[in-house]
Structures are given as C-alpha cells and as structure tokens.
Amino acid sequence: MRETVILVFFDVPVATCEDRRSYRKFRVGLKKGGYTMLQKSVYYKLLVNVSLWRSERKKVSAIVPAEGNVLLLPVSLRQFSRMTCLVGVPFPFLELCSPIIEI
Image (cartoon, rainbow, N blue to C red; front, side, top):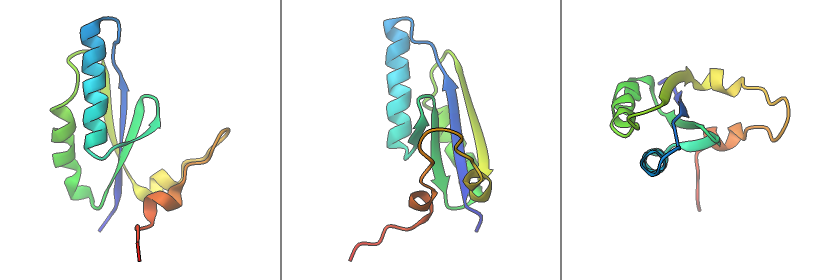
C-alpha cells in the first residue's frame, strides 16, 4: 500500500459576489472532503493508497468554481515528507503519519 498526498493549488477570482460565493463553496467543499489547509490557496489530503486518486479527482472536479485555476498534484507521502521549511513553522509530519489512538 503506497500512501499518497493530494495537493490542491488554486487561484480563483473573488471580484464579484458570485465569485466570492463560488470561492467559499469550493473551500467548504474541500474541508468537508477531508482536505486541510497548508497555505491560503493550497490544501492537502492523505490517501491510504494511490488507487483512490481517480475517485478523489472526480470529487474535487465536481466542486471547482467555473472561473480561475485549480490544479491537483498527487505525490507520495515520502516525497511530501521531504518538504523543507526555510522560514516559519515546520510542517507537522508526525501528526499526518501517526494514527490517532485513544484509550
């Protein structure tokens, strides 16, 4: 089983009320779909295996706004964990990778 991280990069217009409504709907849809914000216009989600990529792509395609740019990039968890923080707070990779166990 190869864990995969999907990165969603987006730049959508927010000039009109309708644009802002589409933007909010998209962001809420990502959050409901299990995505977490990495930066303002970058979200990520961990998939337990690469075979879920196609279905996840369809789910995101169903909620994209009509205008702007939305890009999806699947990367392996190993590649994602190689991300280096040059300034700011390092990404908490242990939280992403470790299972949550409550006793």
